[in-house]
Length: 252
Image (cartoon, rainbow, N blue to C red; front, side, top):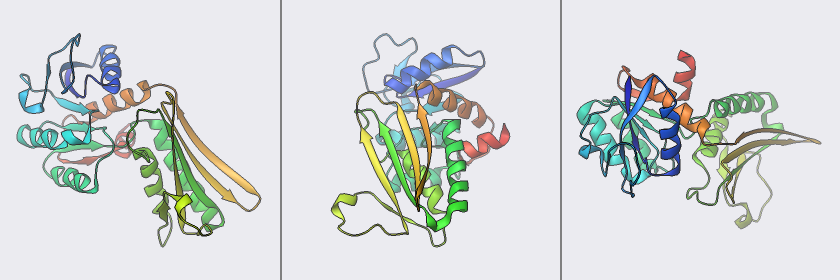
């Protein structure tokens, strides 16, 4: 039985993950990490990874970028693999993750959904076929409590698409402040925040007299929870390195 620690266990995703794992027979939650109020949590909860009384087999993190240092320090000190499912990391923090992966097994993805990985693959295929004859716009929608914009998934889509072009395209975030026609070499990024939208990502290819739209809609946070558990089980026994959903799918 694989023992999992949930970082951010008191948050919405942490609670969803706790429920998801409780319904499985191949793993269990041994403890949680959270600075919030842990009243009613069925497992022990501490404030930092260093305070955990029991060493987990793997940590799944759905907390906040500010917790990264503690998680990486624990991973490096104990050899515990970590699934980093938090979004909103700075460029410096992403570099920290890459550096730590030289000595620890880390899994990092801005979106744990298999459906999103298919959306990326289909979008890259469309970009390769359509080329510069079609403009590309990315529209993402999330609930009104999400603090980062654009979403990490939207950036993951954009980066994958930019790499399909030579020279790479660049991203335009704030079109209303730019008084000029749209450039061929840009990908537009648009964020919508409202209500309880779990997550929707659309890639729009707009060409001469026709448009093609590829879209993924998440109806529940469970899809992300299940993906992150699969990632955690995938990490067990892995050599140090930075893994993502493509590695998980390749091994499936």
